Amino acid sequence: DVLYSLMLLSTNLPIWSSPEFRHKYNASSLLGEAANAGGRNIKEIQTALRPHLGKLIPRLLRACNDPRRDTREQMTALWVGLTGGGAESRAAITEHLLTTIDALIDDATNKLWKARVGAVGALAEVIVGRSWLDVGGGGAVMDDEDATARDSDVSHSTAAHRLLRLLRVTTRSLDDVQGIVRESGESLGRSVRALVVRLCDPSADASQSSEDIFRDKASAATAEQLEIDAKAAASTVLRWLIKCGLNQPSPEGTGFCLSTLLGVIDVAKHNTLQPVLPDLIYHLLMAMSGLEPAALNYLQTRAAGSEASDGYDRLERLRLQMASSGPIAGALHKCLSMIRFLDVEDQKKLVPHFDAALRAGAGFATRAAVADAVGSLCSTSPSAFKITGHSSTNPTVRLLRALYFASERERGAGARDKMAHALGSLAELSPGHSVRVLAIRACDRYMASVGGTNDDPAARRAAAAAIRSIAVRASNQFSDGGSGDIWCKKVLPLAYLGRKDDDKKIASLWTEVWDEGG
Image (cartoon, rainbow, N blue to C red):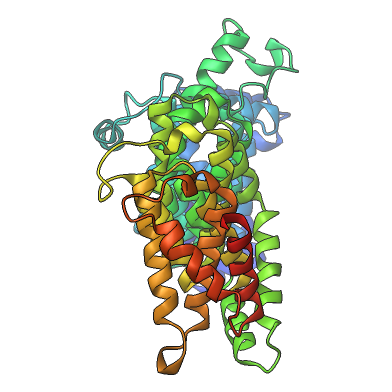
């Protein structure tokens, strides 16, 4: 601390920046004759300072990552002289790892920006390659009050608490007011992501010997213990990332959390992901559009107003192709493939999330992903949509209506076709009364959008596509027309007339309805 304070004072006078005076008061001069005594006196100094290393290490590491180059060089020389450098320094850090991590996390939120830079940079180095036991061990943290209470009292913190504190510090550093702190935060983000993914992977250390995995430990952990630790880490991290991580105010913080979440999903086992699958799938669906560049929306809007009528649809197909081949789509596909292994009651919890994502989705990529997910689950897990109850409170009925209204508002042909396809698949599993009500509404909407000042080709196309999807994919509904026999008395007569629609695409849709039902 004395040397660090002297270096701060040395910036006041130009004489201290000259090589002559700088070398008189550097780290080697502080060690005195010990640096030139063949190492004998340095060993004595190291032995004398060993009881105090627990308090010295965080400060030295923070100073070794100071933004000033001169300070970094001098403190690095002092660090090497006191700890020996290389493997000896690593062993010293490992011996006092928990207190070092806790102290650096506290310094990472210091009001002095130089202290934040040093602490964030030091954290990025000390957490590399650590195991669950190295950072404290213990079980998962599933209680918000417990996680918050341990922030003020770190004496009894476990690995899960430190992992949550690291995630919070990383997102905060990525949104810091100082640019150099944000740069250090990017380095910390890469280290924390690698640590989290490694801790959540039960097979990460399976190819190594126990001696390499837990060096200087009394005993080696078994494969079963590794799986338990990985499950505890994944359960803790997944819950925080879903609840808090994806709602960060800064795009850098959100990107870091999403990247970490995708890495955890990629390595975690099915039994670890299953408890959080509904919320996880919902946030992945919302992220499909949330991370798209805003320039794509601008380009597509300009394409809609250009003379080339197919420019909008071509750009939409390109965006859908990019979204469906990205890492988020891969993680979503893995989560959806696990739905069939859940209990029926847990599967039914997904339906309200689909409805919410479809109504709240900011972009068509999210709505298209919801349609694909609904269509896939209708074939793999049909029991999830067979929910009893009044139509106003039935999640399946609400989702059916949401698909129709979303397809009516959608401008792009690609996303609109996906929604119509999902609507037909869902109509096969929905109550007959709700399907008939939707069919009547679509017919009325078609008639109200024909001719005159009310002419609306988009509404006519959505109504015809909805009826056609029901006729093709839910033909079993045609066997029950209700008390009014709406299929024979309203839908099919309208289909006969709709074959003469001025729009050839709409006319072809009604032709299919007539062929299927007539």
